[in-house]
Image (cartoon, rainbow, N blue to C red):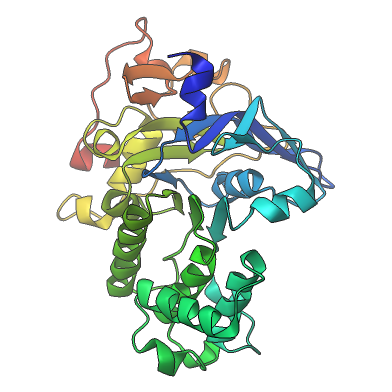
Length: 344
């Protein structure tokens, strides 16, 4: 199979994507040379601390960045459609039908003055303008039922403030699914929800994604969310992907020291009798980014080369890559720390 044919089968194909924002302090390199792909029917989680570039990456894929952003990419295609040169008018025709996005806070996505049913109906009509009123109502009730909103006819006429946070997020999901998109991007969809509702929303996303055969990108700062929902996980730090692999590989065979720190920070994995681990230091400024490996100043395992050269993505397995000089054949052997070793 040729490289072109292989790329045509990918639902999402991103090659060397960079996003730079203009600011009074200078250019901020928010996303740096990111490459990733997504197969139909797959969920990819993108995890990392706040400010690492996760949301900027997803908004670049949707072409929803402000005018102050400059986007460069060798490849940026959704379902085989190269969207790099498309105008906003062309993207409006593709958004929703080809790709759709669920944002973090449903109250900023919903109109507080409109009933929930009317807002979902508006999304349906945006892509099927000729649909008759009765058919629109049936479609809205079907979508509300699909996302787990109980008693759709009764909740059809409610306003956003009448619903709980979990129900509002379900309503936003119904709007995103109104046009049957092939790619769904969910940006921190469970952040404001309690643990029980969070699990319900993640299970719902997984069920809907499988039922529709769509692909999904799930953005989160919580590795536990990735573990529950994702097939593959990409770890971002300072605008770069520093590790990517199947979710099982990331959890059971992590290779990047930053991933070690994230895993050690999970309450469920904290060493008994010890305080919860926190990665020391702060993420670097990206205006401009530091020379070498951006994680070096927080990495107790950093080598001299880390302060001079950024590491490439070393291949661990056919599906697993990590950008750390510790994987270079010339590097000293360093075993993954376990439990309390990170606290030493």
